[in-house]
Length: 67
Image (cartoon, rainbow, N blue to C red; front, side, top):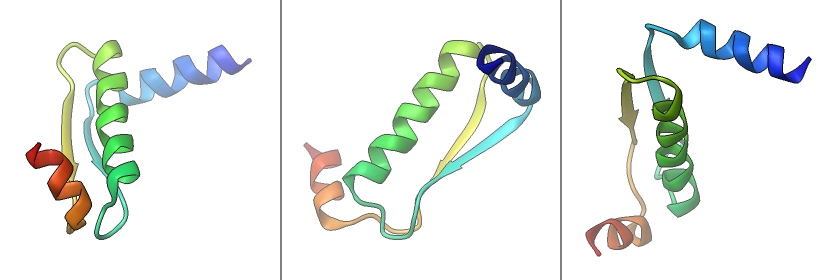
């Protein structure tokens, strides 16, 4: 049953544009979750059309990205 729901979910997403976002002033765990979800979806969709959107990034997350 779980596999069927997962397959239904993937079928629903096929050929769709996807927006992946997190909460405001994203911290490192929110940022990492967005990146991980995009990576996961790229494993199933060759031509994934995903946009990542962040409304503000915390200083610690900016520091992580810069390094």
